[in-house]
Amino acid sequence: MASLEHAARVRRLYKLIFRVHRALPPELRIMGDNYARDEFKRHKKCNPEEAKIFLNEWTDYAITLAKQMKPLQQVKKKKVGEYLDPQLLDHMTDEQLVQLYELHKAATEPTSKSDIEDKK
Image 1 (cartoon, rainbow, N blue to C red):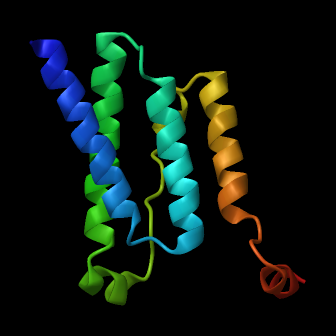
Image 2 (cartoon, rainbow, N blue to C red; image 1 turned 90 degrees about the vertical axis):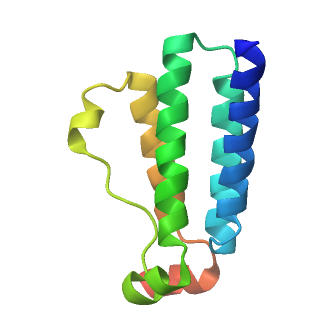
């Protein structure tokens, strides 16, 4: 029974993340959707302790992003995302740090010719 409840919670969170991503700019939406999809697949068979941490972090992400996507917040701040607490880096594996760096590179690289020209 607990397994069914857990699976239902994971599905609801997964769907919520994709709904929240609809408000993102197209480039960020694609990147966010792909990243979330990969992360949920990667953690499909993790142990219960890891699953709890995983779900809590993704829930926090969904809540934070949903707040930032509210029209009034976008008008005021015009920003998406939140800085990562540097202390979290101490708890990450080498693989997670590499993945974070790759995500950073993907998020900051130019997406079109006009972006490349702007950086010159």
